[in-house]
Every structure is written in structure tokens, then in C-alpha cells.
Amino acid sequence: MTARNRQGFLFDTAPENRAANNTRTVTVSVETVHNTGKALLVNDGVRQVFIPWSLIEEPAGDIECPHVCQDITIPEWKAFDEELI
Image (cartoon, rainbow, N blue to C red; front, top):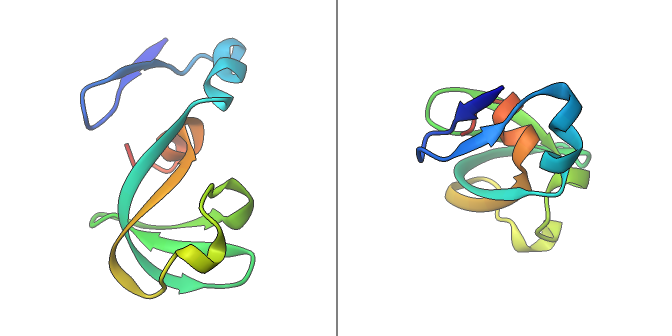
């Protein structure tokens, strides 16, 4: 099964092919709302979701919180699951 993200790119969402998606990352522009120490609460303009720091590629010190527009790089599967793409 494939899905199309907000930018129009197709990617595989079938569970048996999920491992291939684990290595791909995407950069999303979000509003950073709150830092709990273990996760970052972000808002994409539609919803607010927690992203664990363990999934964010940028060092915590490089991400301003709160901040109106921040780019974060996360695994593609997480962005898809949280409907950020």
C-alpha cells in the first residue's frame, strides 16, 4: 500500500515494508509549543503532537522552544503516523 504525503510524494505504508521506511527521514516545519524533557510538543497548524526527543535528529540545544516556526527532522514513519505529512 502507498500513501501520498502533503508534498505529493508517494511512500510505502505496508507493515511488511515498514523497515525500509524506518531509515528515511523528513524535515517538517512546526511550531514548538512545550518541552517535557522526554518529548517535544509541536503544532503543525492542524494538530498538536508529542515527538520523542529520541526520534528528533537535531540536538535539543539547537531547537528553540517555544518558537513559531522550527524545522525538525524525524523518521518518515513517525511523520506519517502523526499526520504531519
